[in-house]
Amino acid sequence: MRLNSFSFRVRYGETDQMGVVYHGNYAQYLELGRVEWLRALGISYRGMEENGIILPVISLQVDYKKSALYDDLLTVETKIKKPPLVKIEFDYKIYNETRELLVEANTVLAFMDKKTNRPMKCPDYILEKLDF
Image (cartoon, rainbow, N blue to C red):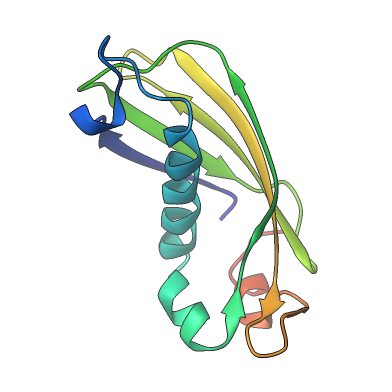
């Protein structure tokens, strides 16, 4: 699986007084996209951490196209283009319910051994679930 979609509604607390989503909240929306992408593969982020694997973000790029508003139903499309090695790179598109493109983003995360805090290869059980 290379692409996963996840939808949710913007909560009041994620917006400013004009009802516009605060720009910093998009990093959390991208995280939701990654977690749901893994879940769709049958992989729990929590389980990875319990098995000593952490995935810190080492790069984050966001291109804001249009504002999301309070109570909008947003869809985060999360995909990877290439098999992960020590790093995994995600591309995202966030749409509102009329399919207007609001955000394009990219993150790069590194597979790290939780005990040694050193980079590690992507686990085989993840690679086996990808269709590359």
